[in-house]
Length: 242
Image (cartoon, rainbow, N blue to C red; front, side, top):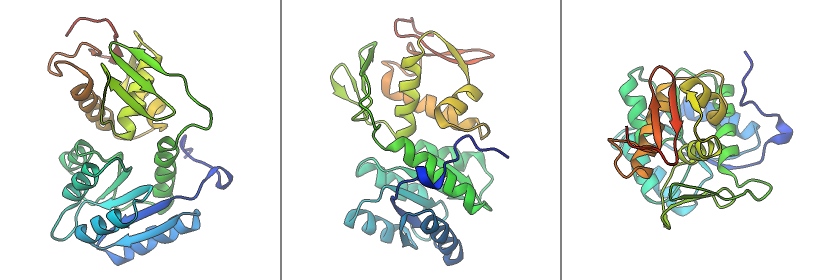
């Protein structure tokens, strides 16, 4: 199977990755594959240890297990995000969609369901890291409906006030601003924003809902990100509320 988000070894850049999992076998395998990909890996077996390592040296990305003793991955992710932006990929052994959605709701950028291929996880890590790094060339600022996007600094303001967007929320909003008035299906957005040709489409739904909550004056009656029934979503800078 071809992965649209795959990268070659030459394209990869070393990053500091924190792996949080109470299963030493899983943690060891994940760490070994990430180390082989050229990354510097730190490990933690529970939530408090993960938060302590995060405070001591903020990583470039966290691979976080959902099921941790004492403090679960949801709470760990929530506390991590409260301390500032850090990309998070959540691991879950559960098949329950509610758990996956909850992880995305608290700020996880992606999730991988156990059992998983370590090589697949490395590719997901590479995909998230690529999008979290500043562009090599300065990007042009974009503005619409009181929103201003600074691609180089990865900052978004609404009427001059900076918004706290996650990595994927930023990418999603930037994509919408680049294509105003055009309707996109969830499959389109998964491919164009996430860089994947396959995946759980509820990921897109959750991120659209979270983005609406941050940029809309009334998220219950969205004016900017419109639902196009039977298709998907459309960004309307000057549209009326649904």
